[in-house]
Amino acid sequence: MVPTAHAREGLTIRTVEDADWPAMALLAATCFGNRRPQEATDMWRAMMPAGSAVVACDGPDVVGMAAYLDLELTVPGGARLPMAGVTWVAVSPTHRRRGVLRAMFAELHGRMGDYPLAGLQASEAGIYGRFGYGPAMVEHRLTVDRREARFHTDVPDPGGVRIVEAAAHRDQLADIWERWRLQTPGGLATPRQMWDEVFADREAFRDGGSAYFCLLHADGFVMYRTHGNDEKKKIEISEMAAVTPQAHVALWRVLLGMDLIETVTVWTHPDDVLPYLLTDPRLVRTVGVEDTLWLRILDIPAVLEARSYGADVSAVLELSDPVLGGGGRYALDVAGGRAKCVRTDADADVHTELSVLGSLYMGGHRASAFAAAHRLRCNDFGLVAALDAAFATDVPAELGYGF
Image (cartoon, rainbow, N blue to C red; front, side):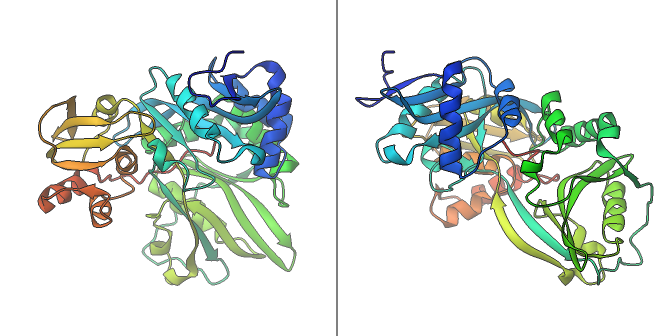
């Protein structure tokens, strides 16, 4: 195989072949420190379009790999955009600092064609900014002391929650999830093979916990595991989707009403109303914060015009992207919640990186914060405030699932 133009001398970057997958599985296990069941690998492979996986080879050895999935992302306002979900990115510890990742990413992003967006989850946060990716969403890990939790008297008790076997209600759970993801920025379309893996509930993914328990409401559900022994048990929520505020309250009333459970833990968006439901909000403790989805905007006009906005703004944006060669200068005009965006030669009002635009896009970060950090440069403080208001969202973003 002739090396691509992106490869350094001695390396070949090429399309993955069927015979490469055992070597890729070994590389993944080495780099990530665990081995995944073959069935899980098959699920992800089924979501990869033709030509969407590449390997870096040093002679016969696979020393790097990267791929993308065919995903659909809900953006603020409810529009859905195709997204290349970058995954299975690894470089062998034997070949670090040799430009392997840069060569693979140049090749992989050149194959993304008509995808307007690329997204990934960063195992190491210092790597992907230089490739134009910005952290667009944040999740908080909340732990509630269930034994002391009491609901405010004004908080309703909607009821309607049932204890069920998840697999027996597959279609209803999938329908609730679909309704949730269509109204939630960050929601992802979930193919059938992914639901197959969820309901397989494999021991390898339980992290020492129980098999799934499930609480079902007409407009929401929770799937969770219990951990610990009879004297000290806790609930770890794996999946929670509530289409209405009433379903959210109803599910939490049941979760916090369980005997023999000390704590209930969930990953959720920073604006979750759970602390406001309780007489003692200190019982809800934030014990972790993580970025989730990182975004690289590939088609800047299409992506900026797809979402809705919270306020009017007009600005010329100069976006730098030195490694992968995107970016450029664009006139953004937002009126009545909708945007027009075109390339322009006009003088720029705002100078920043493509990765910063990725961070602003889902409403999880503020332009003024990047301005204070000198990563967004603008001499008009009023314009920065207008960008804050425009990119803000009423519905907090949540990543549908990890990939």
